[in-house]
Structures are given as C-alpha cells and as structure tokens.
Image (cartoon, rainbow, N blue to C red; front, side):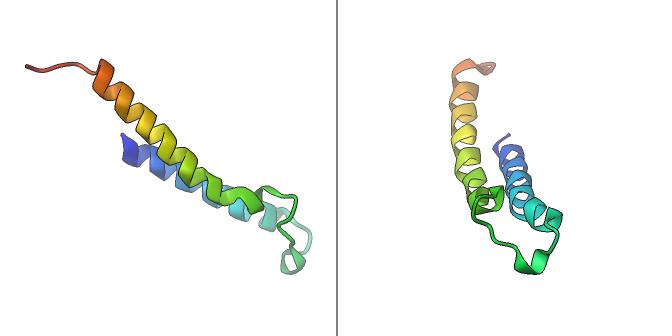
Length: 66
C-alpha cells in the first residue's frame, strides 16, 4: 500500500516540477519563484506522512487472522 502512495507522491512531485516549466512561454528563461515548481519537493514528505498514517490505521483496523 505504501509503495502505491509513494508512486503517487512521485507523480505529483514531478508534475509540480515540470508542468510550470512546460507551460511557460519561454522555458529557457523560466524562474521558479512564485510557481509550484519551487515547492515540488514537498510531495515526498507529504507522501511519507500519509504512508505512515495509512500503515498505523491499517494495523489498528485491519482484519486479524489468528
């Protein structure tokens, strides 16, 4: 489950990094200040936190096989 969350976080992080660059009129003169490209790295810590929360909830409320 956590690997799927981290793959999604990677997709979001790369989209935040490259979408503003590719949407700019002149990619060669792109400045990341004030765009989501400046904050792309936050996708991985957020994914890690979500993964931790899901793991705790999964252990707490998961089906017990005795």
